[in-house]
Length: 368
Image 1 (cartoon, rainbow, N blue to C red):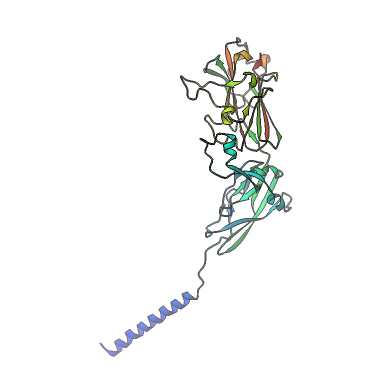
Image 2: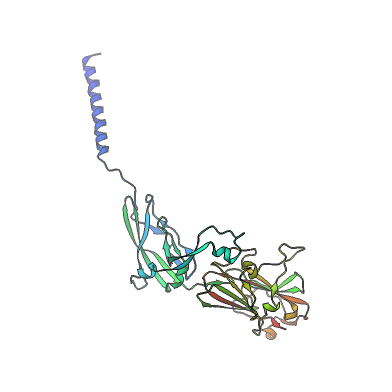
């Protein structure tokens, strides 16, 4: 090989080595980026509607590709006038929480459930720092109604981004005790006396035969009182057997009776002399899990205590239209006493702790 060629190869190798060393040097002097934080982030739904006292959650924050892990926190909350109201949302209230796993198959008594519960102090609204999800707690019952906006801050290894007015809270008056249409529908029917066969006089929303009255009369204790009364307001007295369990349908059904309050709170259910049905409940929502057929409570009023109107069938009913008795165009007269028991289905579920009375007035029956 000629010397000139050897020199050329050596020169090229030296240049390659120089370039390699230069590249290594440049790379070693360049700062490795720890991640990425987006300057713009948002909630897909920027308004979180909160019913006072009801547990619910917002959508999570879309961090627009920001690197994990990141931490989300709120910095200030404002009322609709722009005033900072942080103190309202940092105040804590006693709130019941689970200390161990709830088993609906075995934790059926008040004592068994309470044994797995404890009380901690929680704010009305919490923020999950890893997802940006806001959650309302039962303590939201104490937040004044209105619209609030919240500034949040997102931080990761790359830096911090402040997001002013990223989320709005719309705190509304909720329905602490929900019945129809949220949890089902009232149904009024006639049962062949002492049998399970049932013909509904109305089954659906806006039941024309039922007027309900819901009263939350105290924050404590957690007690629920049910009254079923006739069209004149006379109570069907549960303590005297005037309200009982409704038979299930079919031959040898299992269970033989449909569920009601007694099944959901067997050790705290009572029928005082006043004629109501009372129970202490351990937690909300109550009932926590359905025993079947949703959250409907089924009752039968024996024919010995019920004088029932005969009416034409109602296929549907506009809200606010109620059965008017003998002056109603659906009125056909009266069923013969001793022929039919009255069936009453009551949907109910409690979402906010407290003391409640639910009165169910049935407009097509009179006590006898």
